[in-house]
Length: 153
Figure 1 (cartoon, one colour):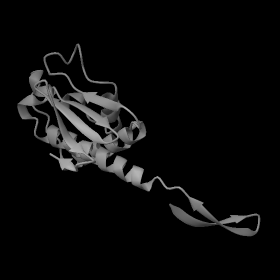
Figure 2: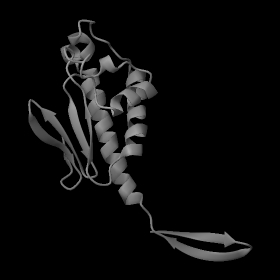
Figure 3: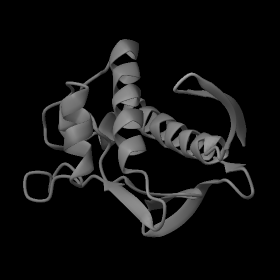
Figure 4: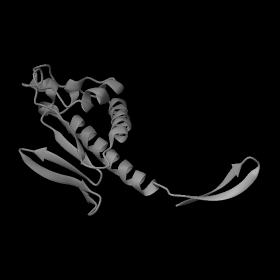
């Protein structure tokens, strides 16, 4: 709850406003964690990078480019953050990238930070909901972040 003075046509009033700061704090926490996870996956992809699997070699990103990716990710995902349900971000592997590609969100994120899609790690799937983050690895889903248990991986 927030208390503020209000000035209306020369009159003073005192208002009490409902604040979404806790809700926004949780959203920011989740989105930042997801951005860090993707950034780490990009930095450590090596032979699991889409570009490498396509036969193009590894694309190495600078710290500045990784920071640009994280800012773009946070800005974009914050706008589409789900109040209910979840959003899913995923990439295919390099051998099927030409046919399958990625989800619809990642091209926009990568376009906003001016980085190629093929620098992303292959076969990464993440669900972001209002209270947790789940990733899939080898057909096994794992909760990597949970606001209730403060589970971090």
